Image (cartoon, rainbow, N blue to C red; front, side, top):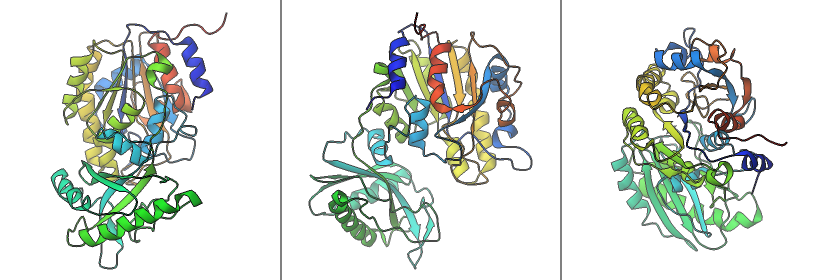
Length: 401
């Protein structure tokens, strides 16, 4: 599938030696607690300095009022219309660990979860079990035998894993077993079309056996499945924008989406400082960098307002590593909002900052929701982030005569 907007970018994009950086602080947007959001509460002198030199606004990842998942939100940031290009969480999870999906594969993301004696979900993340415990449980689940399909169960990180069925005639037109709320039992997986009836039968057979195996392994005594998907076909960033792109992400799923759009995945450490150091170490080898920070989103989902503040402040302390490299254009934003007061992704617009020698500074003094809402870019679709970055990176030629 190819979008008409890609035709335009492909016509005007020019390969240059200039560098552009997209820094994504996952779940950045928040809601006030005692009068301030997490970003407004945080001490961010370096990001504020970028704001004084740049332009700002607020983005809508998918559309006003729509709460986005991480997949569509990231696709929008990379310039792919999430209403045209859909990638299920299963495909992202598989790509994130380097599992190459074949044409007969069906993938879903696993959340290890906790259920009570009545079978109702009490914790959708099983207390964020360790990755080591996750591996132990995946080995048990991989022993399950399913009719008409080969089975793979692979660890992603903490409470997350990926499940892959391999067999002819499987379809991803299935509902999730994860209801995404607590206090209710997992949902039965049902076929959403006649061609998915075989897949529903195979998946539910697996789930019945998994429930029996896990019942003595509390807090991870259940699994929830989400985002059934088969291999997506996407044009690459190199094809669209004539870029040499690289991704720096500690969390597997974000490496996955970067890999699916054709980015080189750079080896990096778990710490924020290590991710910025990876940028510095590889700065001369690529011309587009996607740098992803996960901790802010995890803190928001856990309802930990102060931890999210601390993650944002840690990012700010490392901003000089980025600015000392003098890229032609820097964008700082989130993929979506994850307010700690909601403990979940939300529909709220996301703060956006762009700094470049070619900006017309709009007088902003801070990087915050309040300041960005008054920025010169206004409120705009996240789909416009890449054209803005490319233009300020001097990577777009004139269109037309």
